[in-house]
Length: 384
Image (tube, rainbow, N blue to C red):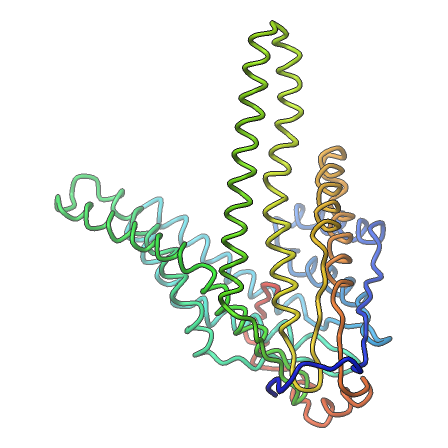
């Protein structure tokens, strides 16, 4: 269903609640981590199912929680497929640069289809009020949005490896041609990155469905370019400030003769600078993308509205990173829960009709009620 008009002021508003706790997830996380290590990674699909079931069962919409029905055995196949790509590329690059190029080419050709299968698997195994979601995107759409950026990002890198592996055997002009192709490809990828991201997100957000109710994404690609331009400016300002501060400290330390004290201060500020240089641009991008994408997703009966605040989210991430550092990583599950809560509870579902009517309308045309068997073919799950 297409979006005909924004939901008016009289729309019913349904805040999304997230009731998970850091202490509960810590117990799940530590057991998962130990079992993944003991089983050399084989337990990874079971760990992911435990995590998803816990997070979904604590995500409430209109008084009902989500549920996840994925089977770890099926997800193991997807994990092995992903591992196979990585092993093929790693082994190939050790023996021959051209073998690595072939492996990268195979990844580029197959990944869009596998990505679509992963989306179908995740949504077909997600339910609300007993209704299964489904992903309506087709294979052609996946290739249209993902093949160009994958080719521009991966093939130049693989080609560089292939040329490095030829030694002096390659014709003299070939390295120069390859260097030109690599430079053009990487430049095109960087310039087109916001556009490529917009295409992928439009494919995702424009194909979420429950029953016969399908969403559409109305975000404008120009807004996405504006976000990335501001992100680059923000990163540049942070870099300049860091250079000025540390340069000033180094100069003051030499002039005052208090070298050791200034070195210690530089280390402390250096850690803080790295922390802020990492999380400030990252937090800005996460907040702006969530608000843009979810606030322009919906149809004529329902839409979402995201109002994640950058100042509050940035403070949360600073706290998370600091406590993860001080606890040697043990605060990680608490940080994950805190971040997920901030992201989810910033989103509100707005509907023109009651949720009971929404679920009844979806239930009459619910093709996923018995599960999407095609989505279970590989059991791929790469998250959303």
